[in-house]
Length: 204
Image (cartoon, rainbow, N blue to C red):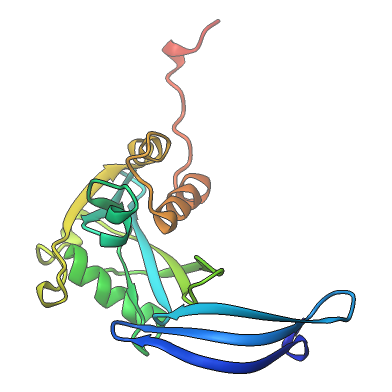
């Protein structure tokens, strides 16, 4: 259902156009009762992005990264942030971009990439729409050390973690990145069947 007929943009002011674009927009929105209400919002436009969870079903492992995120740091996260590989599209198709970003960050050349969903991660202020992917990997798929783009300030460590440990890291607060939590929960539901319990450990 389109809501374009319920929005009347009246004024747009660019507040910043340094790293990305910050705009202040004044508009009128037609409420559910038919009345028009004037509102003002700021939007941060950094383009759309893509993220992926590399997983090895036979060894029950996933590939994650660890890097410094200044916005998280200034909001009380005094540590590096653990994340799934991700990056902005920069006008490329999501699948094309995530393959290149994954190789740059982790050193893994992805063989198969499967889209699972897309989502707005912070729709109250950020315009970004994030495309989510999963892809199988094997240790032999790693062709370089990864580490990211030094010119862009990236200093990325690559982690191989068991899926059960990764899920426990969500509960303990070690993993706090939203996209990564979403991917790991998807993996728990759809990619990693629960191991069959050892009969010797089942109570009679």
